[in-house]
Length: 174
Image (cartoon, helix red, strand yellow):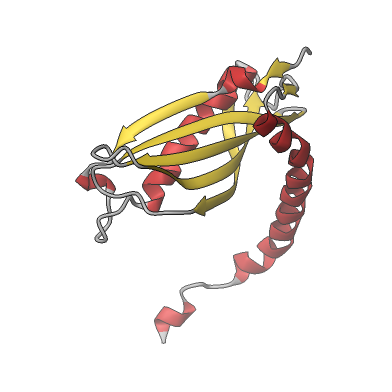
């Protein structure tokens, strides 16, 4: 399978923040940011693979600054790396004060998607070809993030048997 340049997966989503998007601080709900991130990353991974995809993991989400009511946010996503049927997607969230034009990076995130065939089974995806300095840096550091994801997953799986037996509501009964 031939590789594809990362730029072909680049996806931009712009939203304005309304009262229903905010918490009691007047800032954007973290869960709403997560929804926007998953949406734009899904589109980027589908553009790269040209297949149906599922979110396999939200690997990291760093909130760097609050987004205020009335500001616009722009999310930019692109596939940074692929491995067999999985793709790592990087998302940068930038806010803009629409009155002053001031912009700032408010969040960054990495997610992993898996491409599926017509039977819902994992399906091969093209390799990523980085072209810019940013793409190259993210590509060159992606394998380390991949190994860290595998390690976290193994740890979670080893804890799952214990966690399934724990009644998390026990404290509420006291």
